[in-house]
Image (cartoon, rainbow, N blue to C red):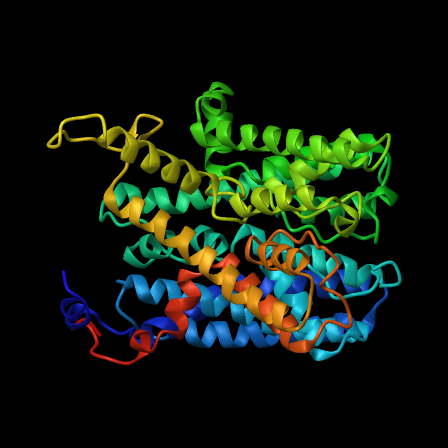
Length: 487
């Protein structure tokens, strides 16, 4: 199909549909502001409580008003992507004013809000140890909500079964059973998420962390967000605590649907999943590469293997917790971490990066290209992963997103190079933002130029929305052009 044909078939979004379901998702993020408001009251921070409370009311009123609009039940794909992008952007913008109660400037508050909602974990703050408990809890809670994904709450409790529910969940079929299944799957994801959170808090508490520390670090670990309550994570506790935290991070990067199936059908379901197998292999290879680079550079001493193991899990799950300053690591180790966090975790988890499944698709595609050299010209070869044949749309999407990720990294890297920042450190920071990882080579700092902070904000949003949704939001043809007949 030619580009002209695609333009003729393209339809713009319908404003009433976008506004209605945007309002529905606004209702699902009311808890993002309401819970920090209550926590701030409990932690004796009335100013933060007041600001979060006001934002809660505004979100509720706006969401209720928009959700009552009449609109067709069917949602176009561009509408679903635009609604998702608008919701994440609005969630971040709504948290700026409450976070400014801690004394942050607007740009830094915007950076913290976007980093929290996108579950990245980068921060421009020089230190967090002088911040109030209410602020530390709010950051971790926003990451927990962002990791859960705003649409999960809407699918589980607000939206009724129908075409809109399927589209927002990415389900194309019209089967009534799958409509009901969409809602049930959302509730299963929520159940796994809450269970992992409660289990993580209990595990860290038993391992020796204080209970407040256990709560905020579990919220950040399950969401693979990485906002810590200390400037150096080793202040959280000894290695039993850090090992427990690594375990929570790992489960946060495994598909929640897969984990739920393992609850129902047994642990053998986990062992048979090719994506989980690849995730564990990636962690092992990252650990071995880090350990080798540490040994060759004589860094960092007796704890080298333990640091390598923790960083391997943190980078591959895109959580971003670090037990040692990344800027002090050998260049080879930083390169290994970039590759690891760029790949990321499982689809259907809170992890960022391009995802393990897309890596498997690319590897299978390369294998197919090599196989075609040795078979007859007219032989039919199909790509399969885990015994399932891949459709052409899945392959196109994987290649497109990986290519978009690489292009975004290059374009975002350029402003940092023009600003005179060391190339490797600049690329590390950009990759971390796009992968929503949060590991930092020291570039993200209070004195970083505001324009570069905004570049990283854009990268974090693109990474959380997997680039395409944000591009759809700003693409002129999304809003301008002919509409479908169904209004």
